[in-house]
Amino acid sequence: MPSHPPALARWLFAFLMTGCQAGGADPGRSSGAGSGGKASGSGAGGGSTGVTATGGSGGSGATGGTASTQGGSVGTVGSGGMTAQAGGSGGSGTGTGGNVATGGAPGSGGSADAGGGGETDSTVPDAASTPGARTSAACGKGMPAPAAGYHTIKVGARDRRFFLRVPPVHDGKTAVPVIFGFHGAGNKDGNWFDTHTGLRRETEAHAVLVFGESLYRPGSTTERSWQDEGQLPDNLAYIDATLAWVKSNLCVDPARIFAAGQSSGAYFSQTLGCHRGDVFRAVASSDGGERLFSNCKGHPGAFVRFRPGSAGGGADSLRVIDFWRKHNSCGPTTTPTNTPPCAAYTCQHDAHLWRCPDGGEHDWPAYMDKGVWTFFSQFK
Image 1 (cartoon, rainbow, N blue to C red):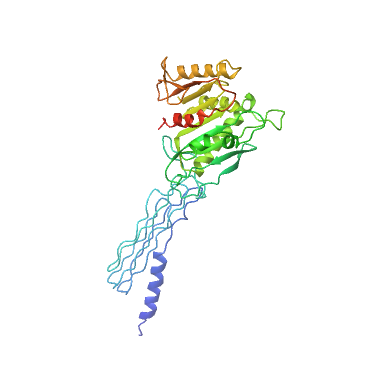
Image 2 (image 1 turned 135 degrees about the horizontal axis):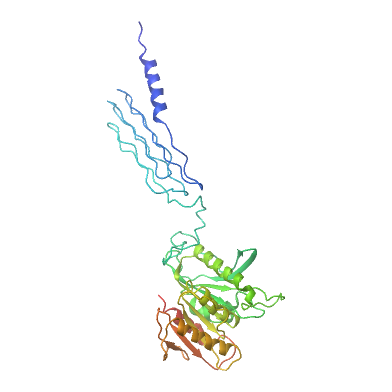
């Protein structure tokens, strides 16, 4: 009776290939990562080469297949699980490579990407920073800095814009402060602080500058203001969205977010100190004070420039100084600063308070350009 060793070998080889190539689930997508499949198969008895066992594609770290040969001259490497995609419980583990076949080399394990809440575009990092972190989501991502000038974002149903300046020291790795600037009322645009004060000259080497642009006054298409009470929710949402954009696109320090404003913008910077005092570390105002304060959060520092006896701004500024003195547990006396005419209160919560009376005009005085940065620089 004739023997058929070639046919038997082919049958055995096909059987082994079918058993060894069992795959796992697909990599995780937005609905969650698939579980890695486990593949195994017996090696060819007395064959020349062990058959490769392929692991299932990874979710929470796929397990590589096992490859073994009994008496084979060379064992082929078992390949590890495929890399898990972002999403679901994606990257909790590393795929395990195939075991060593007799005479073979170790299998290399499949790595797993960090898991997340679904498939994401890697060029758009999350806006939020980890609570207590000193870096934003964009830090270390290798993203190019956005261009200087106007940028538009969607806030609810509205398109809102702001004017941006990025410091030369921004390398995408080292977190820098952020300074918001808010113009006064009237026919002013988002670049008013950029062109009408020296704040940019004194601060652009150190901080990201974001100059906001208010809504038009109700019934007007030419004059803007930050002071309309009915627009406060929209303006707070605008600041939240703008800051989220900044954190997503620039490497900044969430613990050093500041705001400064003139006139109408001065009222708004102080209002932010109340409503977003857990976000803004300090605020500065020129000819503006307390308005629309309620349920204030945090303990921000405050720089208050005012003109004694002036209508509106003088009295409102004195009220806001008194508010911060009580809120931040400041002492009753002041000491001179290196920024005349400002004097400093000693306060709890590391909440510096400067009182800056002068007899100037209703404008942004020159001493505030350097003085505001000196004040903000105290907060580390």
